[in-house]
Image 1 (tube, rainbow, N blue to C red):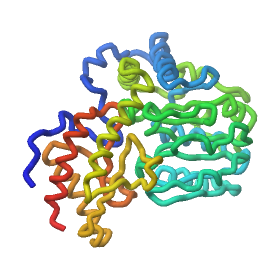
Image 2: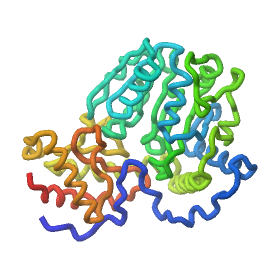
Image 3: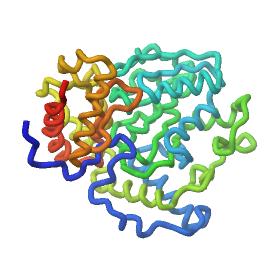
Image 4: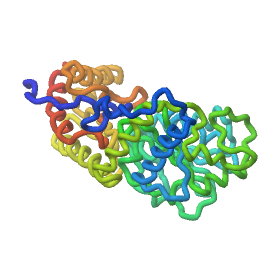
Length: 382
């Protein structure tokens, strides 16, 4: 097979950090508040702007709190786990590596006893209806390393005893999140909007705030996890007074991404872009015999972090190590050609490819990528 003539205009298909918005360049950061304290009046105003624009784009209810927190989505999830869990039983839902990480934290670090683990293998979901809504329920909305997402929130009871703690880092800004069903939502700037790393977002429902103000864990909490003082929520955290020092350069970049999101139609525009990118890739998968989705059920296939498996018989006849090498070879060939960067499977996931189709990716680039995928597979010596 000869090399395709046209290449994607952008070769950035990484699942995090993800591609910057179309047309982005460094001039977008020219007004960044550099050399000033984040606690200065303009510093707080910038941080508050980031929070307010987040609320507007995502449609977060007015009575939910939104805070900028350290350590990306991981830090936001850890803050929720260490400050809120232990008040009642916990159900942990895991079907990929990040969900497994939260299982490890709760069972081996917090060492909680009243815990149920509902698991499924890569490509599938556990039985969500088995989740006990009298417990706190911890889950990822979209499995970034498996390409499997929760289809909706119908399985979450409106009236529930426990909190729902949702890691939504590759779902926020690309999928509809049913806010009344969710008590804690976390995400980072580096995913769907293509922001920079190291900053997380923590969204709390009134029920989550109540938990923070009425429950005190038995274990010590480091400073960056503490959200209450004297039994009351530290409201400043959710008005732009961050716990630690944020990068004002990254803040400016996030605000720029939010302004772009508003220009393309807000949340629905972002969802349409992601779904359109996914559909373009799905049409290629449908007619391509050597590849298939890792996600078994079409209703649960991610529209952002799309994970693909190689199903050609010559490939599946190889042992696991050889399969992994073959999949890596495809990714390496396309990187060498300047066609696609960082599309190998996540290190803990089954061998295959992982292609980001979030809102900052152009549909034309997905379309241009697919013939190159066919070329790279044809180049394999299986």
